[in-house]
Amino acid sequence: MFKKVLIANRGEIAVRVMRSLREMGIATVAVYSEADRKALHVRMADEAYCVGPAPSAESYLRAEVILDVARQSGAEAIHPGYGFLSENADFARACEAAGIAFIGPKPYAIEAMGEKTRARQLMEKAGVPLVPGTKDAVEDAAEALAIAEKMGFPVLVKASAGGGGKGMRRVDDPAEFVQSFEGARREALSAFGNGDVYVEKYVLNPRHVEIQVLADGHGNVVHLFERDCSVQRRHQKIIEETPCPVLKEETRQRMGQVACDAARAVDYIGAGTVEFLLDANGDFYFLEMNTRLQVEHPITEMITGLDLVRWQVHIAAGHPLDFDQSQVTRRGAAVECRIYAEDPENNFMPSPGPLHVLKTPSGPGVREDGGVYEGGEVTVHYDPMIAKLITWGEDRQHAIERMRRALSEYVVGGIATNIAFHREVLDHPDFVSGEYTTDFVPRWLKERSKPEPRYVLDAELVAVLSAHRRDEALSQGAGVQGGAGAAKSGPGSRWKELGRMRALGR
Image 1 (spheres, rainbow, N blue to C red):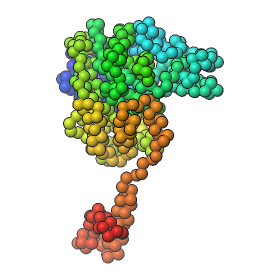
Image 2 (image 1 turned 135 degrees about the vertical axis):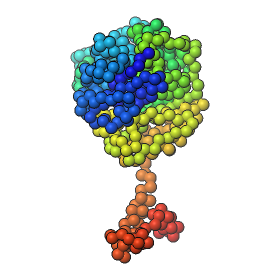
Image 3 (image 1 turned 180 degrees about the vertical axis):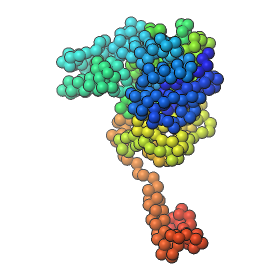
Image 4 (image 1 turned 135 degrees about the horizontal axis):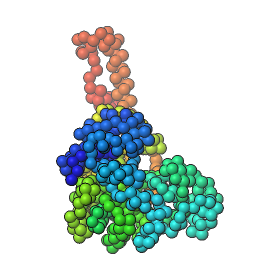
């Protein structure tokens, strides 16, 4: 087993990985940018090294610098977390060349599944069901339009590389196709350095359901059930849950088997996720494979009792899985909410700044994977995630009830967050029923009325009363110089005074 591991990431995922490593008795090495000098993951690590200025391209994405830190610190392995270098085949290959274990899949698997058109070809050979679409990237807009018209609208124009909704356009009208095609190519080139796109039939009102897989280097592959990630905005996941509330057991077993087949098709090693679209008829289609740990992995851990990071480390060290599919069991249900420093009432704009107050929830069935601390700061330079909040329950209703309770205990002062927005989603009839699809949030946001700000009148009354008391104290000669008179004439409890005013009907 490794004695020291470098975590090539930041924020909550770096902290989460460190916790498992510490439990395993493995020393941890953090890397950080100048902007993250006081970050939580830096404070938690046994060693920490600065790798450059704030921009990620000059720090967290500098593979050669991170490898130098690994050599300097004596780290035997690197855990990439998610994002940054986690799905960079060249980095994984460089780790191998340096004699440092990459805690993730082999470079060829990353390349095979990272290129969407190539992945589709491999999955077709493996018998994995695919959404109708082009097998290769299409360069000519007129050719792509002809293909789209033959498929029938709506269609998706999708980047061959990358993910996260970048380089993706839904097109409902042939007249809009060429513009959307060129726009997707430009965005893909800017985001991934690869402007290749392909055309895929758009599945109306699908659910986004993914299967977690684990595979070792000894030919063993298991699935750890599904996660429903259909609560999305602009193709970004907001809330995830397991099990999927509408999935039939027969379909669940079939999806799990197909996910394992997909992993075997690329000789996959480590933790990975095979994503599917599930239509209204219960048919499912391969979407993509994420060759890394997912943001939403904790809900799988909650229902299976398995530590995915621990298993990633064991597998990277050459150990086989010590269980088979028949021994993987699911207990209860789990829900995850992504807590962001963003303002839902201002088009979800990021809300960076200092965290003056941070009170996180706890209690039965509650887990909070955070990457910040009270007095710290959410910077402008990176993803504004504060934490992931996860709850477990004996069934779906229990898990949701616990999430509602946990969100009510979550207090963040100094910046705007999406906590209240999560509470709205959990109370929405479509979510409560479990009958939602990927268009749920976009459709609801068009109809949603902006909620009335809470306690605004109370705050205004207290502010007016405070100003009045100050003026009164100054007029009596107190307050400026202080002294006994100031204490005697100073204001009492603002809230008690507000209560008296209300009782008098003022």
